[in-house]
Amino acid sequence: MTRPRFNRILLKLSGEALMGEGQFGIDPETTSRMAREIAQAKEAGHELCIVVGGGNIFRGLAGAAKGFDRANADYMGMLATVMNALAMQNALEKIGVDTRVQSAIPMASISEPYIRRRAARHMEKGRVVIFAAGTGNPYFTTDTAAALRAAEMGCDALFKGTSVDGVYDADPKKQPDAHRYEHIGFNRVLADDLRVMDASAVALCRDNNIPIVVFNIREQGNLARVLAGEGTATIVQNEE
Image (cartoon, rainbow, N blue to C red; front, top):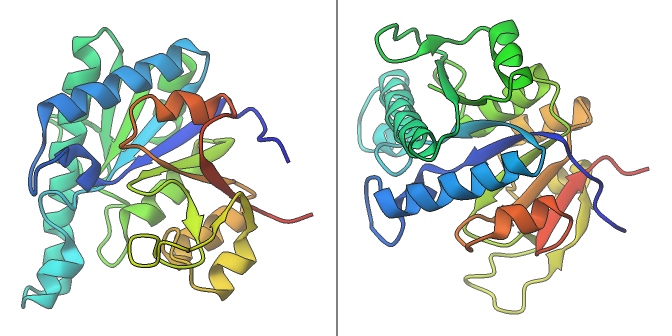
């Protein structure tokens, strides 16, 4: 089965993807490389919006496990995503890509508030919109925020850039003989608890018929290859 052409996409980047080879924070060289790949995708005619996680700085669940109040920890994680969004905006604008950061938590001095119609208009004008602060609510992950924004923006697909090259039936880092799926259904992902994204995000994409394309963002040039229907990836979609 060949991959369809996706024109308007939401790119979900994990915060960890911005660390490069480091263990914490934002690596400018890695962020610049990702910005160049996003610019290349835009030049190929794709409309893009982005949701960035915050795990390279602070992760709400991890904070809660160490004794933070869960809601406060999640808000701290949202602030981390704003820092990552501004870093990505800086990298994109350095190479001439017009961007807008919209935050689900109003921060008038550094970003626009999230307004769906305004975001859609930015995309129509060729700008890359970066959505920050998750959904603006605790207890929801940036995976869920990505699925929500993909639905609101009328995206053809949600591209999840991660550290593995697709969806496997087991952790390939622990089991070298794990099987990678080329295509798999949403219901199978949920039933087998394959953890492509959290369950609410997968269900939201399923109910709105938004395919999830899982690929390795750490591999240089991979975003362009996967968008072109090449490269290694797994597509999660509703089965006929």
